[in-house]
Amino acid sequence: MSGKRPGDKPKKPVDAAKVAAKRERREQAKAIREAEQRRQRRNKILLQVGVLALVAVIAVAVTIFIKKANEPDYVAAPDGFSDDGGITVGNPDAPVTLTLVEDFACPHCAALHTAAKDLIDGYAEGQDVKVEFRPVGFLDSMSSDDYSSRALNAAVCVVKDDPKNWLAMHDTLFENQPAEGGAGLSDSELTELAVASGADESTVSTCIDDNEFEDWVDYTSHEITNEKGFGGTPRVKVNGKDVEGTPDAIEAAVKDAQES
Amino acid sequence: MSDTTAVEEESGDTVRWGRGTGILLAVLSFLGLAAAFTLSVDKIKLLEDPSFQPSCNFNPVLSCGSVMATDQAAVFGFPNPFLGVIGFSVMLTVAALLVAGSRLPKAITVGAAIGSILGTVFVHWLIFQSLYRIGALCPWCMVVWAVTIPLTWWFTLKAVDEVASVSGVRRVVRVLWEWRFTVVGLWYVGVAVLILARFWDFWSSNA
Image (tube, rainbow over all chains, first blue to last red):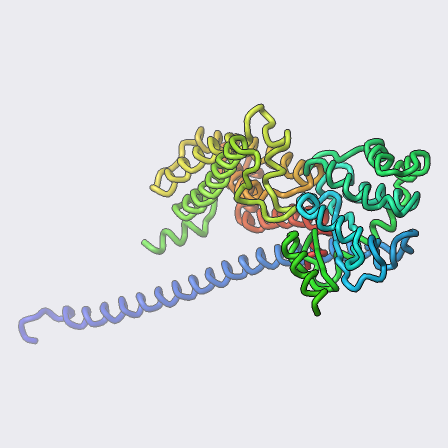
């Protein structure tokens, strides 16, 4: 105490306390400022995400609403077809039913046709199994000219002319299936196939050109593709039970059904 | 130290690109490169063996085999993905410079912006073709669509910000930059809604 100048000692503690207090205030201020910045940044992100989510929900909802509103109305089935869109070949009293849901624009259906043609022809000619075709035309987006539904319309035109030509038209449509993407067969090419299947040219050509069964094709395709368990074409069933789309699986399931 | 960076981030008087942006751009470029490369390889395999099933044929709508076989898949006389392999390689290199901490010369930023804008125009033409002319979606092509949009947006905003001398333009660019993720998100929503509408029958029948 004695050796020091007055003023020295009192000054230092005061300074230290001041500096500490100042630092504390500055840190508090900084913490508040940073908290505010964090809050603002969070609010900005919430706003940006919110705007995006809102627009996305509205856009999707409006699209779904419009699409639902445009779903096809009921159209009575044309002659030759049952109310649920089926046309049956073979003995109508056969105990076993093989059901085929196919689209004429579907490559896997064409492949199944190639593989299973002999088997199915055998059922159609025999007495034990009837074959129910439930054609759909739901793959219009796979071609530039709605080939899927036009092809089905052409097949219905053939049935209108004479139901017994259905199977021939069905086979020839798969055997002449156009490649995916791009344009499908033209109306005149479809007419040629119909005539080759045994249909009367003057009847089918106007029916095909006018796309006469367009509305029913829309309706039945929508109904069948929205049935429970539908997961694409071909869909194969034996006595109402889903079966893998291969000749072996079909034959095995038919044998099972006959034995039970 | 932390004070000054905070101030820098907040002042936002330019479109700031740090290492984070570099990493994002590198990831996007890499995804684009991987997709374009896979498509190129699949195209060659398809030419060698027409029955080859490309790695992305999932169902009638999601299938690149049918898309790759179209005229639109080789607009300039050679398969489109070759362009992607070149373009995304350049983008990846530029992004790698950013990740390494470099500042890009103005000419490089502007060049990358012009290149990516041309890429975006092409991609949107392909989106239109895919939806309304071909009627199928090719998954790897969609990866290319998805990465091209943000890459273009990022480079274009940065380039305009560096080149523009009018303060009004730069203010607009700054707002767009702040909202960049939302803008790209909205862009995706737009394309997704077109896809949903176009392939509605297919999606709803599988639901």
